[in-house]
Image (cartoon, rainbow, N blue to C red; front, side, top):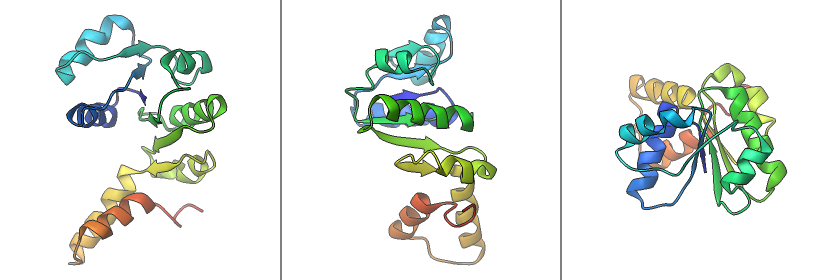
Length: 154
């Protein structure tokens, strides 16, 4: 389940399609905007309009049977509430939460999503490494991605 239609969400949706994975997109955008969303992706999507933080909406979208929930809106507070709502309904669901503004990292960590992704902090770590002439291999990039912001906002 992908919650949101942000740039990050749309990129992720494309990647899920390329891998042949089934998913539903829950968005606060109204149904009359669904054709525009599908046009951007270039494919018909399973879209549901509603409050992405609402238990009923997540339940109707199939939170009880999904493998993972990706909270990918542009709003960090909404992403936190999406994860909290999802875990309330299905404590076993794997959750991924994107943090758009690094200043929110300390508070967002309290939500205890399975994966926290901070593109802002990840990007700044890569830039610092490149400017310092450090080698970036697969293992280092993966480690940086999964620990971006670790220790900065504890």
